[in-house]
Image (tube, rainbow, N blue to C red; front, side, top):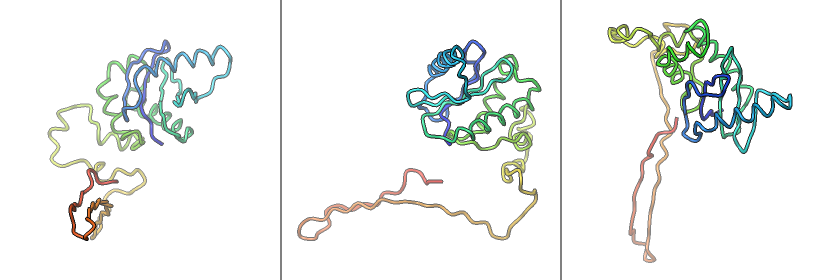
Length: 201
């Protein structure tokens, strides 16, 4: 389930805040969404998912806002709808009322939240309890912290805090490429081993 971008639009389709996660969607798609939405409203065929030319627009309306997830990949649309509802709950937790003005007044926190709830288009943390540990509204509190909050090391909502293990393990798959060039006599002309540019997670 990879979301390319999330847009917060007003009722006229103007972008208030947007976060691009994958770099394959431009802001013009928000305009295209409003055009398609208007067409569907006129035909009385509104659905929470609009597909157009290989792009899926998954949205919900909250007060005077449209929260829009845009993707080019084949995704589980129901999971994205659930994610958008959870995102709205998190924003309401922080701002009490989710409106255009609250987004504009708190855009720094909105961007921090968008960075924490999703990583490269994949949902991460959608619970306010965990996000409260990461995002502190008062900047001076973050500077005085001696050690990272428990949420950094224990960021799973169902896991009990304080569990310690004697043996911690991490498994990585490091895929290397071996290139070998041999001439007709069997002599090695060129050989090299290339480590991975990035270790897959």
